[in-house]
Image (cartoon, rainbow, N blue to C red; front, side):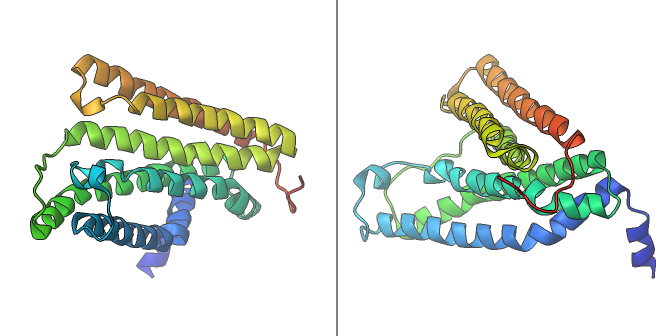
Length: 239
C-alpha cells in the first residue's frame, strides 16, 4: 500500500521518467552485456592472433573507442521517444512540458549510467591484457575529462535522436528531413570537437571543448523543447 501511495505522490515529470526507465532498462542492460562481450571478445582474439590486426595489437587502450556504439544506441532510443511515447503520455493527462522534462531526466539518467559503465571498462581491459600476456603498456587516460566528455556526448546523442523523432512526428517528411539534417550537423560538430586529443590538451583547451559540447547539447534541447510545446497528438503518423 505504501508503494502505491509513493507512486501516486510522484510528480508528472517523475512519472514520465519512471515509466520510460521501466520500459527501456532491460534494453539498456542487454545492449551493454552483448556489446561488452563482443567488443572484448574481438579484442581478445586480436591479442591472441586469431584475428590478424597488428595496428590494434600493438596499440593501447582500445576501450577509448568503445563509445561509438553506445552513442548510436542512445541516438536510436532518442528517435523512438516522441514517436513511441508522446501519444500515450499526453492522452493520459501528462502535459507536454512534463513529458519534455521527464524525457530530459531519463536522458540524463541513461547518459550517467553509460558514462559509468564505460569507465568500468578500463580496469576490465587492463585485466584482459594482463591475462592474455600481451606485451604492451597500458595507462589510464584522464578519467575525469573522459567522463565529462562522454556524459555530454551521450546526452547530446540521445537528445539529437529525440529531436529527429520529434521533427518527423510533428512535420511533413520534408520538414522532418530538414530537422534531421540540423540534428546530424550539430552532432557532427560535437564529434569534430572531440576528435582533438582531449586528454592531452591544455586545461584551457579542454575547458573550451567541454563548453562547446555543453552548448551544443543545450541547443538541441532548446529546439526540441520548442517543437514539443506546440506538437499535436496524432493517432497516425503521416508522411
